[in-house]
Image 1 (cartoon, rainbow, N blue to C red):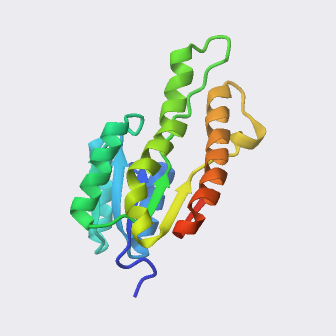
Image 2 (cartoon, rainbow, N blue to C red; image 1 turned 90 degrees about the vertical axis):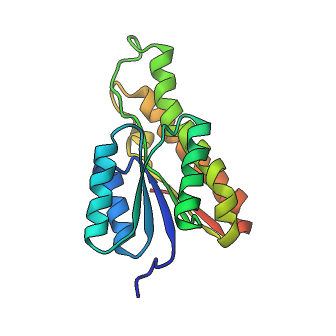
Length: 183
């Protein structure tokens, strides 16, 4: 029996790179996985096929996590398909490069909207389901949050905000048996 049999995980930004690896690892441990991407359904479908080929269960979903309504639709689709949500992995992020001199406020907000506000929307949408059985929220941080990075002031600020969000949630949700960590 696998460690996560019967559990359901949502992974944002799961079409490639770290998100894909997380989705595959969760499925390998027995979880059913919602593979969430913003726009590239082909990537999400490929991850779902990989999971299915190994005997796992997965669902590909398109959702712009900067849009609260789209995130509610995503969470409802996961509940409809799998009946529960136990794990939320907030991996989706934008890692744009631009000097602060050349950066517009719209470019600043785009990174914040996905990386930080998107995590907020996902937590809000999944929280009622997570509270039913306890669970876990894992926010994917980045080294740049702690050391900075040239031409990534917006990314650094968003990722450091995610650290603070994680710490606050860990205290707020502990009584509901929901663990919250930033990796």
